[in-house]
Length: 303
Ligand code: SAH
Image (cartoon, rainbow, N blue to C red):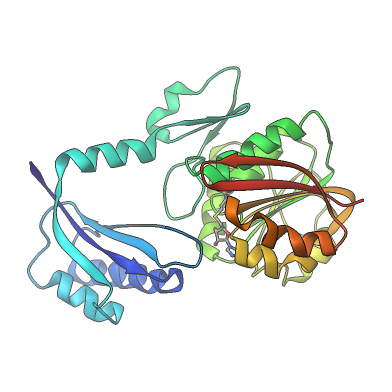
């Protein structure tokens, strides 16, 4: 059975998605049409992302053509059709299910009544930034943070590639006194992180000030003076992809304090050796690993 929901689907490099998003917003505003919903997810590191634009009903004639023209190209589109109702419901449910990882319970606002008294509850709605806990790489990091809680007491902490801010918030819930930096290359992620800090009654802070709280920074990798001011960090989480993790090995190790712990995630099990090598070359030791499906999180320590 088909529904009234229409889906424009294809594959785009990650860098091209922002252009499509801007085109959707502009065109919806100009035409007064309710904007379709953009969703995108990664298949494998380095491959194009799967992009879906959902229309609540069949779009006005010409809308999709105008959108594709504005977005610059239509050669990425693979299909445009009414969505099977069954699949749509199942898919959206799957995305919205709450996740339990260690002591953490991550849920969307539609499940607000399910928050658990014995869990560390994090309300993160699926939206424009990555990190609802649903993805294996995030869940693996949450499990690592859960087990580190008994072992370390970091005073300064960095969440590099914070996305929705989920790991920075998890850290603050475990170590409320920590001075935390949450950074991302994507300004939208940082906006979402700031909102999620408020929603979860987290404590925010301006970068450069001392004291408990999460300071947000927009920066590619460690390319911002804020990191030198804020560091060195006793705990760093970096759930990005194998490529940037390898490229950033020296920079990340540079801001890790002696005795500090580094959690790397976003790599595939098959990429373990190639990601570890540059960190071993920087003198770090492996302390642990958590496998989730084909994904792997690594826990390293600086002597
Ligand atoms: N930490 C969250 C989000 C992970 S998704 C979680 O664990 O769920 C990875 C995030 O890293 C994205 O938001 C992306 O914008 C960001 N990112 C990718 N490359 C980056 C880089 N070189 N520097 C900073 N952030 C980066």
